[in-house]
Length: 194
Image (tube, rainbow, N blue to C red; front, side, top):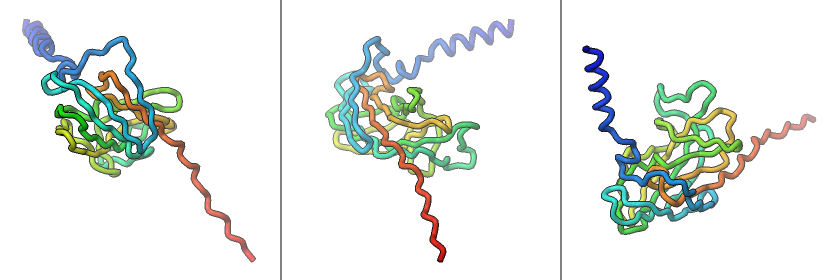
């Protein structure tokens, strides 16, 4: 009987919890594909979404991928990727371009894509490359905020693009930044003798 009460209590507790998308009042996923806006790293793109705070209005955010750190170092002693993985960090810059205030987690909605087409969602980690975003970020018209979003990717993965959509990735527009190939490491010339 005690076990049954525990199971029923747990079911009631979890039954009242919504998904992250429902909690943030984000639109539900649809069958239609988002409109993709492709640019290069360093370029900004204006993306739209719905007002996360109260459902009224349209968000207009200029989003820029400033740089991609292919191999980032965890900031703390316990912030290390799992075996066979590495951290990659992407520096985003957000600017609210519209009248509707932005109040959401900037981390959800970001993704990196490797050369094999696999996508990787953010992980919870801070890196020495720079500051992370707060869990929830608020921006009114004209405000700008910059920070890093961290991803755990396989060591051999070659990141070829970064994607971002407002509303935890459910907005109708998707920004996609092409990551330039890394230049091969140069070996210094061998000094001549004689």
